[in-house]
Length: 192
Image (tube, rainbow, N blue to C red; front, side, top):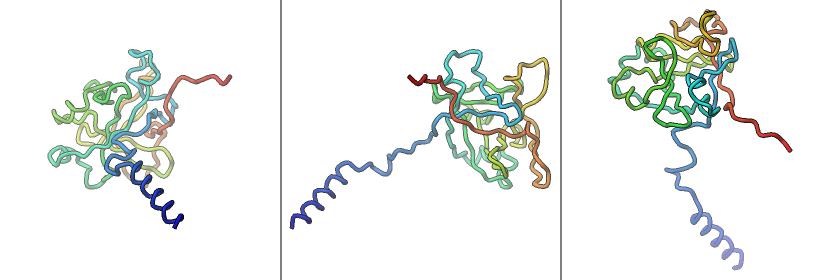
């Protein structure tokens, strides 16, 4: 009898402190991380010169579902069905990484970009046979990927752009075409 009472009390406490599965611990966001070039190791951060906070050199990944109308702008949607994401600034959930008309990366309102249909903040992460990835931009019909480039007139931390993706599985990807995700760039805490 005592055993049954104990089990009933235990079950009661489980129901009392259980988390609602619809809320859960998962959200639309991931922990902070940095996007780095496999070629240079440099992190992609258009806010490096405008913010003193290391947190602003990181990103949070937000998965998005495009409307049918916006999805039609992706010429490779059928061929590359890897889904769509936005890279969100950790300090502002409406500030996303965007490929600007200049060809360089910057920040733009996530919501406004989806509303105006330019898709400058929308990317698709394409897996490779290594732990690195190709990051496809939906600008220009979704046929261009994030790369690093060489130009001695541009500081190395700003040498990120886009160019036509290498999609042929028979071709090897060059290092400048590959990106990888690393733990967030944060201030180190000294051990005492």
